[in-house]
Length: 316
Image (cartoon, rainbow, N blue to C red; front, side, top):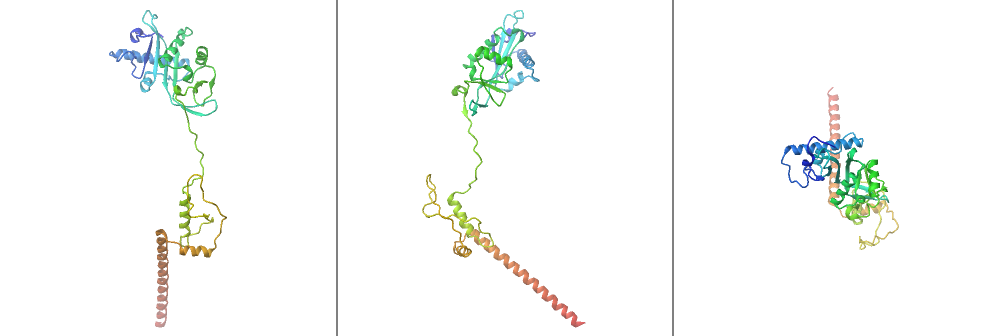
């Protein structure tokens, strides 16, 4: 891909690595603003050409996206082309992604591998070994094997390239757009794999322990009328001293006993009263006294009205 400026001056190495600063790895800064503008132009043109080759509606590689993301872009050039000014052959963009993958057994695995995000070689440079040269440079730079990488929506041509040059043919089906191959899950150190814990099924909610439930049952039996009694009969513990909650020990079970109403009433009268019980009883007593006073007041008014009516009748 030719440009109206000197590519060799812009990218001094055959393979140049660019990051979010858009500055080559061997250069600490870009002193000339026009050189930075030329780099932006090259990246944007390569992104549009890659999107067109993959039949994408919008480019997935641009200078602005590279600046906002921690990705790396490897750019390959041909030094002798374009009358010694150089031409851009293609690029390869990689970056780390946190993925949730499935192995052959269907186990969910959380991994953060290095992923191939975009790969493009200009049409007039294809089938000349430039693609494998660029890909090998990236592998050596990261000290990585291609089987330990993930590939984002690879095209049929890219899959053919991986099968021909790196013998990657058996892929593990995934539910997302990434493709991984067999052998990816074997090296847990490089691929940074860890199993995702299974979600526990929603079971019965048990807010109280055995001792707490026993205390609640005693308070319910001590509630004054007209609070209803619990409908289900209570379990009794064979020994008051055997309330251990350690592993391997549990309260012994005895046949359920249904108590009579008189026994319940006696138990209610003899049981110690809690502050809540006293408060409820005092409130109920005050309400009953208020109702009685209201009834007496209404009776007094009715009697007074009858007396006034009789007095008016005798006066006539």
